[in-house]
Structure formats: C-alpha cells, structure tokens
Length: 296
Image (tube, rainbow, N blue to C red; front, side):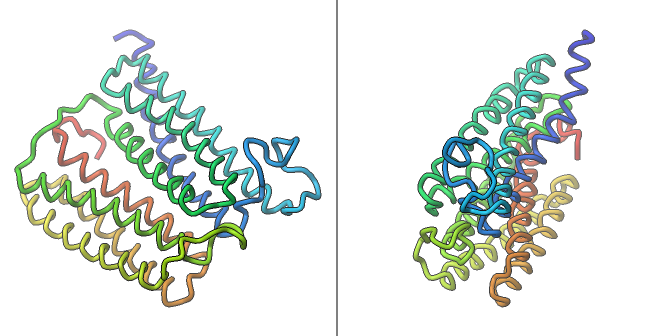
C-alpha cells in the first residue's frame, strides 16, 4: 500500500465522521431558523438581500433573523468542503465501493442549496420546506453508510427471509414517520415566518396519525429484536434505536400537551435525526457481513 493510499485511508475516517455530523447539524440549524422566525431573514436567493450576499445593516428583517438564516446558508458551504474532502479521500484510497456514495453527498448538497433557494423564493411554502428536510434525511443515510464502511469494503449478505422483510419494513416505516412529522410541522405554528403558508391539515389529527405510526414502528422494532435473537450486533443496535425512539416519543407527547414550545420542538427535531441514523445503522448491520462492519 502506497503512502498516498495509507494517508487517504486515515483521512477518510474523520472526514466521513465530520460529514455525517454536519449533515445532521444542517437539520438542527434549519430547525433553529424556523423556530426563531428567521426563515426569511435573508429574503432572497442566492443573495441575502438585493445587491448583497451577506446581511446588511438596518435591513427590514432585523439583524438577528438575518444572521441566523445566513449562518444556516454558510453551513452548506462547510458541507461542500467536507464532501470534497471525503470524495478525494475515497478516490485516493482506491475505494471504488464508496465512489457513488461520496459523489452523491457532493451533488446532494448542491441540490440542498437549490431547494433552499426555492424555499425562500416561495416564501417558505411548506412543500419545499418539507422536501428540504427529507433530502437531508436521504443524505444523512448516505453519510451514515459512508462512515460505516470507512474501514474496509463490505460484503452484502442476504439475511433470513423473515429478518430481511421485517428490517425493510422497519426502515420504510421509520421514513414514513419522518414524512408524517413534516406534515405535522407544516400544519403547526412554527413556520419560520408569520406570513408563511401552512398545509392546512388539522394539527391534532396529523399528530395522532404520526403517533400511531410511531407505535407501529416500536412494534416492528420488538419483532426485529426477536427475529435477530442470535446476533449480538443486531440486538445492540436495535436496543440503541429503542432507547432513542422512546425518548423521542416522550418528547413528542410532552410538546403536544404543553402547547408545542420551541425548545421541545428543537429537541424533537434532533431526536428525529438520531432516530433515523439509528434505524439506518440497523439496516446496515442486517444487510452487510458482520466481519466487514468493523466500527460498531
């Protein structure tokens, strides 16, 4: 192994970890933009205000809102550099198995920038706002896979029919839970701006549908735990998922019965990100050879 390959291999671990952290952070900071009413702190795109790419003194939206929104935009640039670092490390290390994942991160971040611009130019229409989050969820899954496979190529395995079917249903249901969460949010009071359009669904009804699917997800988690009784790695990851999901559910119920306070909404958004990462790690463990998964 050449010195260049060894160096690239060493760089890949922290670079992929940073990329995953930043992808998750983009969701949390995006939530902060919405919860502080700063969604139109920079009222245009790609400029922040007409004639300037940065906030300007005395703009009508206020400096605090402008810099909160602008800070979220700056994080996208940090993500671009992190994705380039990962892509270069993958190429230099000769990891052909990771090229598609690394390239997907790079181009996906540009897609996020464009979708963010559409969100601003449509005055925070809830459809692109929801799409912005869901694209982040997809990119987080990719970044999780990248980081998981950083040590060595994996061998994809075919689990027992029952375990594989439950696992697939589990990850699909996890995604549906997040989609329903965006519909609840898009029907609630924290729109990012007082004048922003809402979906118009009854928030109580959407919240209970969301909660019902979460209960179904916990049932699937129990079934998956029973189905993987002979695999310690699988059970450990399922246990971690269960702990995070139960904490997330508790936050959800508390925020619902306390009038949806901003701090709990922020915690719930962070929890949704962690739940998704934990769910994806279960899927990775079940679909790849245990001997190749060296990072558990």
